[in-house]
Amino acid sequence: MLDSPQIRRDRLPVIDALRGAALVAMIVYHFSWDLAYHGFVRWDVTGDPVWRGFAIAIAGSFLLLSGVALALAARGGLDPSAFVLRLAKIAAAAALVSVASWFMFPDSWIFFGILHMIAAGSVIGLAFLALPPVVTFIAAALALAVPSLLRGGVFDAAPLAFLGLSETAPISNDFVPVFPWLAPVLVGIALGRMIASGRIRLPATAMRGGLERALVTAGRWTLPIYLVHQPVLFGLVAAAASVLPANPEIERDRFVAECRPIYGDAFCGCVAEALQGTDYWAVRGGDPELSALVSTAGMACRAGETPFD
Image (cartoon, rainbow, N blue to C red):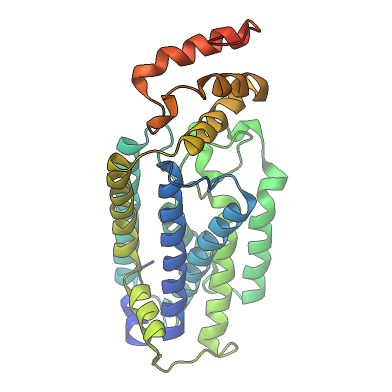
């Protein structure tokens, strides 16, 4: 997400603008996730195919642009010190995200997210900087196919989860494993090599429109904005959730959605219906003082009786 000093001396505004646009899309996605997490909206941000496609497009854009940046930094020779400094910043940011997410979401902490993959892709990508773009494109296709070819239980061990080849996907709020996500990095490297050689020409002039300039500026400060935006947004939404009333219908839907994978539609629907006439849904996540009602309703539903009848 950071460019090397080599790129800063001769950078392409259009690349910065694209990175800025990807950042805006990521902020929109995270804000939507925050709203759903705190019960303001019914959006299934993590499961709905449209939202999943949006998230995949965002991650793919960042990884592709990181590959382009790496290839452009290598034109005329890669500066080892600049590369190591850039890598250290990204790795440190990735570690910070992991530690923070461990404290906030210990059951779904981020052990290999987008920043981890950008760091890993930067190191792996070094092997492709001198190769013809066509070879790198082929390698990208193979990286995309690897999960379908090699996935197996042998990769279920926790230390190998980052490869993305386990049969059971790990639970994480942001999981961007090496396979298949090395593919967009390699595509970016191939495209960057073609840009550097002049086979692909991009405008090198400064963008004059207000929106374009804003995107360029955001694209040049992607890493700090990335690190700051989600804690700020999450905190603001959490603060709003603490003072604004809950939506009982949304709380009921959330209860059923969380219950269904474990207990099934019929049982969860029975319990939710039983709680409908109570004040349980008046509190986000359910009123803990009324938790006994959930147990009573659950026992009645299991016994085939009508709860609270």
